[in-house]
Length: 378
Image (tube, rainbow, N blue to C red; front, side, top):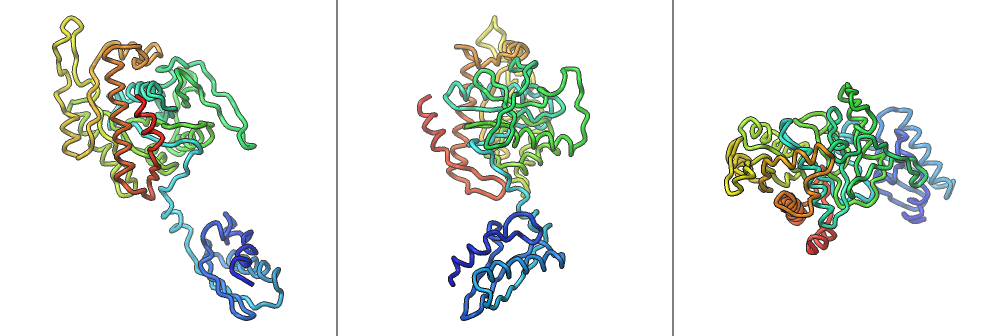
């Protein structure tokens, strides 16, 4: 009798709690084989006497199926479920086919976070990437309007025997939003657990297919949805959007601080300064800094995070969002170029993070090789 034969025999033994298999959980710690005796050191994920006893009986049956005469000694180490859950709190479950998840956040509302997300997605598509958007602003979804798909309804598709939602696609971007399931005048009045459940369903029960980037448009502030996201799946990095004014910057600072918390540890890819300046069409050489000057740039320097760029306050950007055709779709012009530069900065920052930061329990960052290849083609 060998260890490999023994492992094969106990491969179908369930954990003491009944959740998962003992071997798959890494709970078979040691196997010793002596003449006529086997010693098993295993972990029980339940302290309940009846469940521990059942685990022992299952192990005895498995070993005796090989040789009913062999003596079996089982040493059980009890590991409390609370400790196990805490250790795995932020590991998350990756979404098959999705290479990188990038959260787009803001400390406060009204700074243009959703506008940035929509145009960043279009710019990445223009660069040759496959992109999806999860509209995680449960209480104020914007993506159906910004992509002119308010009346769209996600379809259904069967994948590996499971029924999943098929995201709505517009301008080459796959989109999932709670706005597809609620009328335009219907308020979503949910407590935190219900909003969290909806977020997880949209994440895990949507057939995203193969994506280079899944952009998550988070609600403003720091709350349940943000924590649920980082618990639900590995996030490659976060982009924080702010205007230059002090009120917005104070909240943006908190947003960066949230991602840097020990319990979260999401790399901040950088800060975007939206509505940085206004240039009158009649005087293209002039810039008016209506909300302050270089506030987000200064904040990025103070917090030692990359500054991803300035976005101007331009009427056409607002108009494009209102009619459901993001401004980055323009065939040429300064607006398209400014969003293209932002996309390049995000990809570059993410590539740097992948190269310089080791994977953590909270964030699993995979190779950017595929993205780098596409970037070189831009």
